[in-house]
Amino acid sequence: MPSFRFKQFTIRQDRCAMKVGTDGVMLGAWAAVEGKKQILDVGTGTGLIALMMAQRNPDAKIWGIDVDDGAVEQARENRDECPWTERITILNSDFCYPFVLEGYQFDAIVSNPPFYKAQVYAPDSQRDRARRSEALPMDMLMRNAANMLVADGSLSLILPFADVNEAVGEAALNGLYLKRRCDVVTTAGKPPKRSLLEFSKIIEPSTVSSITIYNEKHLYTDEFRRITEDFYL
Image 1 (cartoon, rainbow, N blue to C red):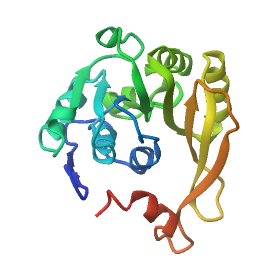
Image 2: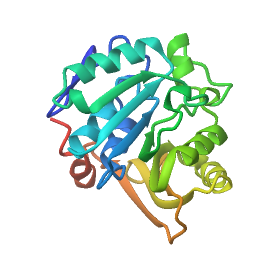
Image 3: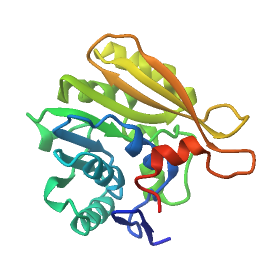
């Protein structure tokens, strides 16, 4: 599908390895954006999450970064055609070595990071690179996020359920602590496949919840419809 239409914007994706998917939409709808002024989308891809952040928070300025040239071009195209062009900046940058962001501080960092392990390869080399965790190791993601967040800032991620403990441990080593966790069940009755995670520099009791995407008839559940209703047509 060369493009994907949402209620207030369209995402073109013909030049981007990672297409619009449920993971990105859920993270963009779930991440904390209230009161945030400067938001960074790490691994922006098509720019989907950056545009969702702009729609949800009319006062925020959003930066989206990606290492892939095609993704950066695509994200800029989508940015240029959306209603919030002037508030979104797309940069070609590697979050492992984010020199172009040196000195920047953010109220929120959001990322749908690559998480497939080394032994998993996609046939397309561009897609493979976009999906593999070596492109953005967990320890480097946590370290750089901690350095770029303001004192009361937040880091929001979506990860495989199996990687939650690793992420929580690496975060704590870098002074980031779990604030919210939402386990994502694809189909009712199945174990969770993903987890939405929010980290903060402030130590406080964390909340744990869950959401199911499809019911037994493989239709969207009411809870999933509620979280995405501002975006899906």
